[in-house]
Image (cartoon, rainbow, N blue to C red; front, side, top):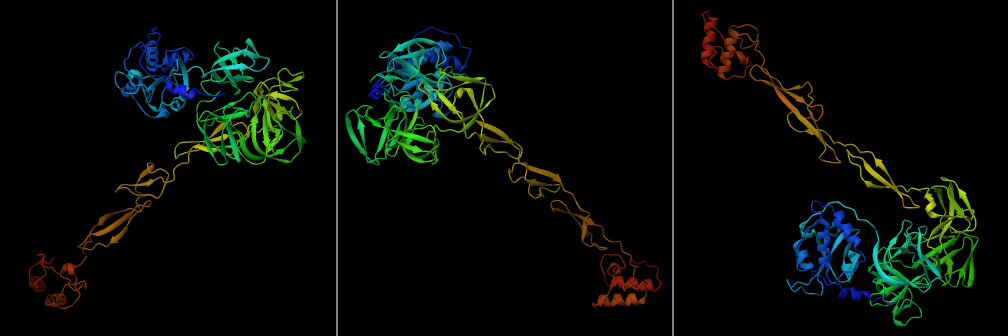
Length: 633
């Protein structure tokens, strides 16, 4: 199936102003983004004049909110209303602007660019190749329109909103390859059958969705749904490879050589050969009518998946190349020439033996098969990994479940099995493996050989040791998240706040001290100093005050207070300090004034009280001792 859509898309979507339907819904008082987002989503799949992307956006806003806007082209419009270039914060209802197209605007002279309405999940709804479509932003970029920015249409900012529906746009025509196929009202096998298509009938597809069980269903042009098993895409009808967008990958050749084919079949024409170590740019993939995975190269050809290793890719890009060892968990396993139990048996491997694996694929029935190093095939049930590799699928799964309600177990992995039994809600079920049946449904095999549908089971979780997803702080609790190693479910536990870790108290000022938390310097405590009773650090005299020093018992800060001078007890005129005033004191004063080194009581030397010690004091003392009426100081 040669895919030539890339060139078609690059030449389409010339983004000039134009006309669309004009019914007016007056919502001018509202700025709820849901209005325009869900209006745009409702138009997906409808025909639309090619090249009028801006006209579509304008008309959606006119219908949703009742206002008109003018601009000559998407590029000019985007230059006027840019809000942000960040792709990570685009709000619902915003206009997403893309860069230059090949078409030049006749009014402003710019290359016209492209515009769409953002509807969530990195998707826009826009006019493209004659139809209103919902595309991933990367898909527009890969079609040749670089992302520029986003802004509010005519500066009319919207808030909130939710988007209805999760159908991805996808266009193609498919041929029924089995005797008949049921078409359903909803995207699941238990919904009402709307019609039946037979082998050779063509089905037009306008979108796809993964239902609640993870199964892929196509939405038809009649609004109902069909499961893709036994549908083959007609050449040159699909706008992209089902069901992936044009997201690039780089693969490396792991064998001596690989041939590149004109179509995704081994019998197709060989276009070139690539050698070991060569790197190949991939733009998509397809499972052909035999269920084999082929990659589409960037030059429009195809290469088979075996012996190609992924270097980088979109997370949805499958790779069938792997190197690992699997251990047989059943008594024995048959090796087949092809990935079908109806093909030729070419050998047997016994219980606990190791099998060297070099690849895998899901065959046309949706069953997982491993390719061995000898290029034989072994069915995945009862094979267990012995070499850890999270990218390797495995159908061996010894797990414990509980039933979610009263359910039936069947002798075969089909709802219409000949034998079944009812089991009660809450019953524990031990499983030893699972399989995907030919309808694409997953059934677990129980220890006793019965099968039960996976939607009937609830995992008995096996939690890992957990990881801190929100760290606790001094004052706030944190969160630790645990993940089930079996099903990926998560649960959380709170982490107690760590509390403060204060350092030593230090002086803040004359009245307070403080201490700071070592975990967060913004957290601190303050308190008043707690003073001890103090000690005399300088003794007072009769002439000089002393000093008393107080110390904070918490932080060590100090403060001082003065100590009063001592009161004098000396007798006036008692120069030698013997307790009496007589001629001995006169003699001692004479020696002191003469400069001799004698002991004196300094506080009584100034006997006349004039503030100095000199001969006047000697004269006063002589008069006193002579009985004259004089006073001594």
